[in-house]
Image 1 (cartoon, rainbow, N blue to C red):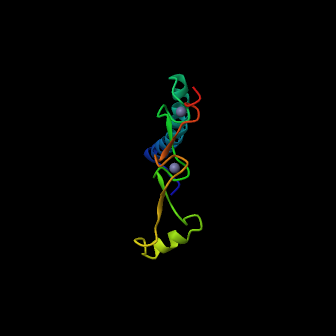
Image 2 (cartoon, rainbow, N blue to C red; image 1 turned 90 degrees about the horizontal axis):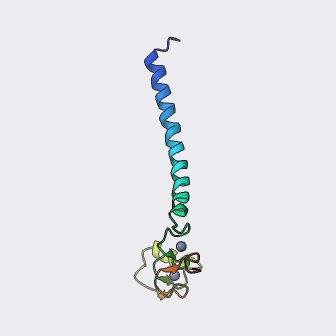
Image 3 (spheres, rainbow, N blue to C red; image 1 turned 90 degrees about the vertical axis):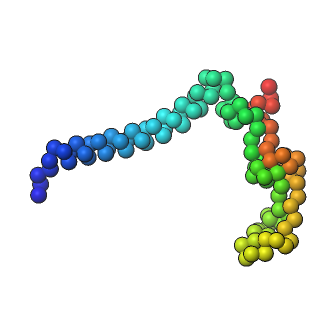
Length: 107
Ligand SMILES: [Zn+2]
Ligand SMILES: [Zn+2]
C-alpha cells in the first residue's frame, strides 16, 4: 500500500519537471519575444508590422450602426442578420482596418 516503486517516483518526478518546464517555457518565451524584438531593433508594439489592428472596428474596417447599444447584435442573434444592418466605414482607420503604429510613426 505504502510501497511506492522507484518507477512511480520517477514518473512523478518527470511529470513535475515537465509541468514546470512548460510553465517556465511560456514565461521565457514571452520574455524572449519582447527582449528579442528590442534587441533586433524591432518595434515592441507591432513587431515592425508598422500597423496595429483598429480598436474601433476591430480590424474589419467597418462598423455596424447601432451596434453600440447592442440592439443590432441582438437582432443578429435572433436570425435577422440580413435586415437592418448598416455597415459604415470606420472613421478612425479610414476603413483600412488598421492604424499606423504610434511608436513607429514617431520615427
Ligand atoms: Zn477602424
Ligand atoms: Zn511599431
